[in-house]
Length: 88
Image 1: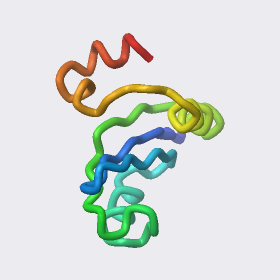
Image 2: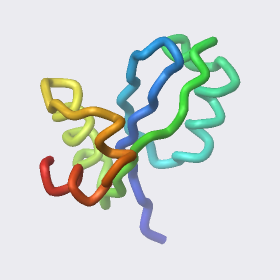
Image 3: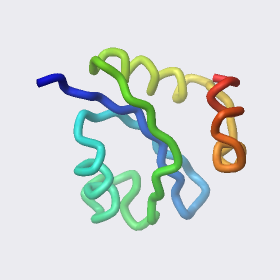
Image 4: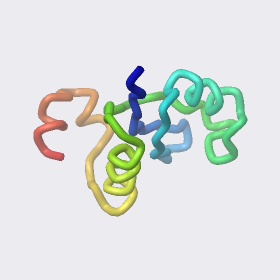
């Protein structure tokens, strides 16, 4: 059985974003929301974006692209996701 990996972005209620990758997106989101992840604890994180990958290394590479200067706005993604994808 093939494992799917995800790169994801959370928007927190204090205006910060959290970038991560995982092979169990639903479980990871639950961890963020129940306070198990220190960065997002008490920040009511909401999933605003995710991508699927075939390998952990691809997902990690994409996370690093976001963390190392990939510029975009969450509102732009919400307005027109296809435009956002084209700009990445």
